[in-house]
Every structure is written in structure tokens, then in C-alpha cells.
Length: 316
Ligand SMILES: Cc1cc2nc3c(=O)[nH]c(=O)nc-3n(C[C@H](O)[C@H](O)[C@H](O)COP(=O)(O)OP(=O)(O)OC[C@H]3O[C@@H](n4cnc5c(N)ncnc54)[C@H](O)[C@@H]3O)c2cc1C
Image (cartoon, rainbow, N blue to C red; front, side, top):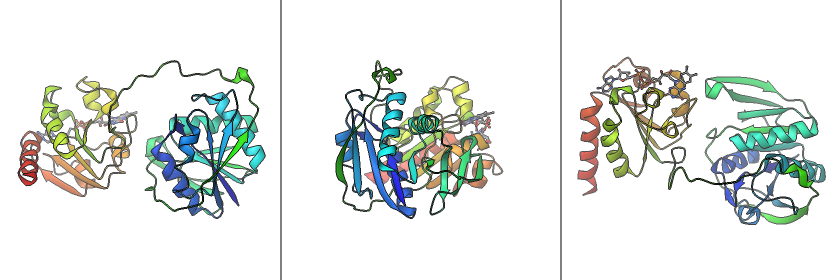
């Protein structure tokens, strides 16, 4: 069986979730090949052999540049027609799912998004629905199976393969570049909430925007980022880009500290990928406390500065 992984990248920067998708692709029964499209594709292509791609098809056309769903979608379709895979996979990111929807619509094929588990030939899978609150068993019966892998469903691992880069020129209608990137604004410099190794979150109990200063201090000491619950963003204490959860960011840090957060399902689904969770809460019955691996029943306003002090002491 041949498995083709369509690589999401931004001017050569491969989306981290793609390495997870390649890891899942290797677990299927078949040969893994990759497709890279658009500006910076050459740079992206060189990173994929280490994650098990035997061949990387560099799709070229004068009409391909920065990300454009219609043009990239058609380019992927041309590559699929040429390479004839049984399974086409990508990461279940916004762009990954958008691209797959383009392919599905253009080839009249069904598409299963956000899979967390797949059988050997991708005919049966479990997919994540409602931001992770529901796992659904699905069967897929199609000549070419289109699937995306939910971010953080697995940990990315490497496996050296040839990674031979082969050029594949395709014809794209210039009129397909209907959605184009006109401008770029950097929202977050450095590590982001979804890639931070440590996330320190605060909930309603923090009490104010200023109340997040001790959390910022602790995050600074641990090289992490500050997150929050929706109660916090609703109050305007933090921007939405800091929100963890179903309607925020799904995170998977090594350490997640959830302070003054009750652990509602909508928050939990964004946090449950964390490797170690510490809940700080005054209520021993709070969902976050009962679900976390570790919990301290205490006032966060006392506990967070105490942890920061202890970290500083140990660093010294
Ligand atoms: C469609 C939908 C989508 C949603 N998406 C999200 C989402 O993406 N992310 C999200 O977070 N929520 C989301 N929510 C909201 C969610 O249901 C909860 O309302 C929200 O997470 C509650 O925030 P909280 O835990 O900060 O506040 P609360 O539920 O009010 O919890 C506050 C906690 O602080 C504890 N506490 C009080 N004082 C202290 C103290 N001094 N020290 C320590 N602990 C203390 C309390 O015991 C309590 O457990 C969504 C809701 C809906 C309907």
C-alpha cells in the first residue's frame, strides 16, 4: 500500500503536527512518501527523510507560491493522480483540513478529519469530534482514503529513511489563486502556547489582569508560557490567543499547571494532552483536581509565588 503525506509548511517551516502525521503514517502497512508544494518547499523537503519519508515529491508550477488553498489543493490533486496512492494523509490543522477538503471536493472523495487512531489500511479509525470531547468510531470505504491526524494524537518520533527528493511539475490554472496571503503579522514571538514545554494557566480565581503577574514570573523562570481559561478571556484579562481549550488552543506541554481553574470539559479537552498536570485549587472536588496527576489544595495567590521562590532557590 502506498501512503502519501501532504506536508503543511509555511515558506519552508514544516508544521510540527506534520511530524506526528508522518509518525502515524509509518504505523500503517505501506510505503510512506511525502508531497511538498509552494514557496519554500525545497527547504521543507530536506527535513522529511528523518521522519520516514522514502521519497519526497517536490511539486512545482509557475502558479504555486505562498499558501493558497485552491491552487495548493489542485496541485495536490495532480500529484495524487500521478502517484496513485491508496491513502492520502495530512495533519488536522486548520490548513491541513482545508487542503484535504479541497482535494476531497475536487476528486469527489470522502475525507475523515482529526483521526486519533487508524487501523493498518485506514479503513477504520477513531476520530476526535467537538474539540476532543467526543471520540467517534468511523469506517472509510473509498478508492483513495483521505484522512487527517489530530494534532497531539501521538508524539512525533524519527525513523531514518532515504528522503530522496524528486521534482514533479504540474499544470495549475492561474485563476485558481483566488485566496492569497496579502500580509503577515507576527502575533507571538518565540515559543507559542501550543509548542511550549511548560504552560502555567490561571482561571477566574486569578481575579484580574494584574493578577497574572506572578504566573508570568513563574513561566519566565521555567521557560514557559502563560495560558488561561475562557472565564479569563471573557473578562478581558488576557487575549484569546492565551486561552486553552475547545475554543482556544490545544496544548501538550511536559508540565501544565492549572491554577484556579475548575476543569470544565471545554477546558479539559484542550489540556488533556499535557504529560504532567498539576492542579492548584481550593476545592478538592474540582474536576481539574480529580483529573490531574498532581494537585495542591491551596490558594493560588500563595502557591504560585511559593513555587517561583522554590524554583529560584533550586536554580541558584
Ligand atoms: C461552547 C463552549 C466552549 C468553551 N470553550 C472553552 C475553552 O476553550 N476553554 C475554557 O477554559 N473554557 C471554555 N468554555 C467555558 C467552560 O465551560 C468554563 O465555563 C470555564 O472553563 C470556567 O473557567 P474557570 O475554570 O476559570 O472558572 P470557574 O469554573 O469559575 O472555576 C474557578 C475555580 O477556581 C477555584 N478557586 C477559587 N478561588 C481559588 C483560589 N484562591 N485559589 C485556587 N483556586 C481557587 C474554584 O474552586 C474553581 O474550581 C466553553 C464553554 C462553552 C459553552
